[in-house]
Amino acid sequence: MPKPSLKDAILDAGLRVMFRAGYHGSSVRDVVQEAGAPQGSFTNHFRSKEAFASEVLERYFSHVQGLVALALDDTSLTPRARLRRYLDIITGRLAADDWMRGCLIGDLSLEASGNSELLRAQLDTIFRAWRTPFAACIAEAQQAGEIAADFAPDELAEFLLASWQGAMLRMKVQRSPAALERFKTIAFNTVFKEPS
Amino acid sequence: MPKPSLKDAILDAGLRVMFRAGYHGSSVRDVVQEAGAPQGSFTNHFRSKEAFASEVLERYFSHVQGLVALALDDTSLTPRARLRRYLDIITGRLAADDWMRGCLIGDLSLEASGNSELLRAQLDTIFRAWRTPFAACIAEAQQAGEIAADFAPDELAEFLLASWQGAMLRMKVQRSPAALERFKTIAFNTVFKEPS
Image 1 (cartoon, rainbow over the protein chains, first blue to last red):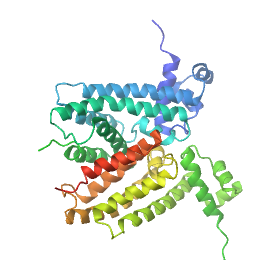
Image 2 (image 1 turned 180 degrees about the vertical axis):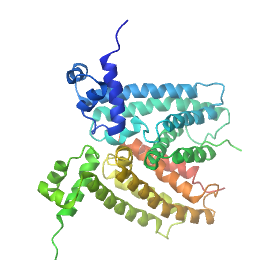
Image 3 (image 1 turned 90 degrees about the horizontal axis):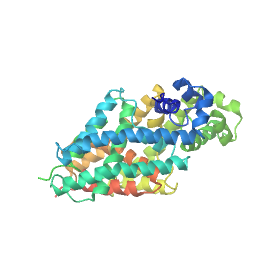
Image 4 (image 1 turned 60 degrees about the vertical axis):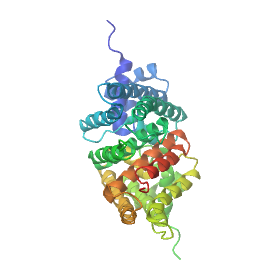
C-alpha cells in the first residue's frame, strides 16, 4: 500500500491556512508547519506559492463538485427543490464552521484575481464549470414549469452562484446565517418562484 | 493655510495598495513607499496596521456614501429608478478601472473579517449603515406601488447590497461587466420588478 503522500498533507494544510489567512497572508513556512513537513518538501512538490494555491483551489473545487452532485443528482427531488437543496447543504456545512469559513473560491476571487493571472483564469474556468450542472437543472425546472422561463438557464445559474457568494460574504461579516436564509427566502419567492 | 497632511497621503496610498494586494498583502513599507513618506511617519499616525486599515476603510465608506447620496437623493427619479441609478453609477466607476478594482468593503469582508475582530465589527456596522438609505428608498418605492411589498425594506436592502457584492466578485474574476449587467437585468425584472 502506498503511504499517505506528503504532497496531499501539504495541500490539506494549505487549504486550512488559506481559509484562515488568505492567499497573501499564507507563507510557505506557515503551510509546511501546519502540515508538520520539512520546508524542503514544499519545493519538491510545488514550483511556486501560486502553483501551490492553484492545486489547493482545484482540490477544493472537486470537493464542492461533490456537494453539487449530492444535491443536483438527487432525482427524488424536483429540479427546483434540488437547487434549494444545494444551498441548504452548503448552509449546513458552513454552520459547522461557526459562520467564519465561507468559500475559498469566493475568497480567492476577491483576493488573488487582481494579481495572479494564473489564479484568475482558473477561477473563471471554475465558475463556468460550476454553472453547468446548475444551468442543466434550471433548464429542467423550466421545462417542468417549476420556474419561469424568462431568462436563459446559464444566466440564472450565474446569477444564483454569484449572488450566493454575496450572501456568504455578508455571513462572514455578520457571523450569522441570516444572509444565507434571507437569500434563499427572497430568491425562491422571486427569481426562482413557482409560477402561479 | 495648513499644508496637505502626511496622514491623508498615507491613507490615500493605503487605499491604492490594499486594492492591489489586499489587507495581508499590504505591508507598512509598501504603503509608506507608495505615499513617498518616511517609515516613521506611519507610526506617528497609526498604532498598528489594523488601526490603519480601519481608517482607510472608514474613508472609503465615506466616499461610497457620497455615491449613495448621488443616486438615492436624486428626487428627479422615482424611488425604484434611484435604486437602479446607484448600481449604474457604481458600474460606471468600475468601468474606469478595467473591472479589476471592485469594492474594498467586499474585499476586506472576505479577507480580514476572519482574523481581525476590529475590522469585522466595523464592516458589520458599515453594512448596516449602507443598508439604511436603501431601505428608506425601497419603502418609498413600495408605498408608491413601484415594487411589491412582499418583503420588508430592510430585508430587500440587505439582499440588494449582498447580491451586488457577489456580482462584483464575479466581475473581478471575469474582467468584464457581464455579471453586473446580468444582476441588474434579472433583479429589476424579478425581485425589484414593477408589479403588473
